[in-house]
Image (cartoon, rainbow, N blue to C red; front, side, top):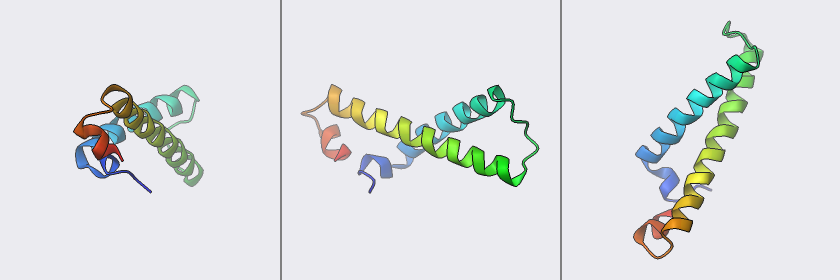
Length: 77
């Protein structure tokens, strides 16, 4: 279940772009070429999903830690 802030388009855009860039870097560093076979697409999807969820959690936690009494914490719940 996603929080209210994870449903905002701008939040999804920022975490998605960061996750895509980091996923591309990880795949290139691991030596996976970009020939796009089925196994490479699945590997990239799992990598992207894990990284995107990690960025999302980190941002959500930062909002709660740095502004616990503001409206941002109401959005994060």
